[in-house]
Image 1: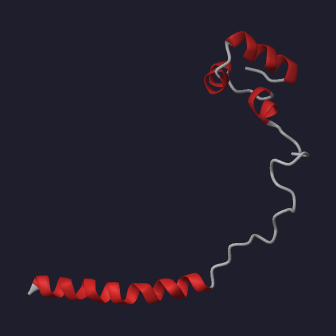
Image 2: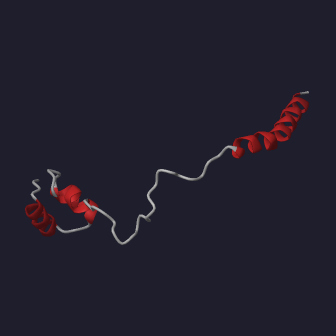
Image 3: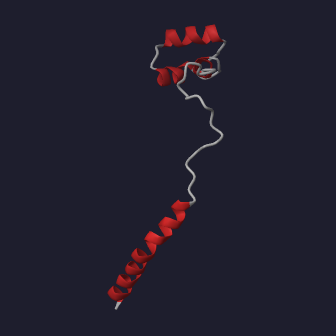
Amino acid sequence: MANAMLLAAVLVYFLVLPFSALALTQDFCVADLACPDTPAGGPNPGLQITDYALFANNLPSAVVETVTFLDDAQVKKLKSVLGGTG
């Protein structure tokens, strides 16, 4: 009896699934109307602040060394140039 109930539930699920999926995809909007006309990798990429985020802060140099794979001397040199401490 339990197998018949399970089979009936699965059968109903597979009969209803295609119709519900169609209803969900009919009103799906793909376009992002707020995005700019130029691509992200265009000739004018804008402000890039990775160097300031990594070296102009008070993170310990050991953390920055681990993230950037630079040695201690290079990290301290970049921190002194960009105003970072630690």
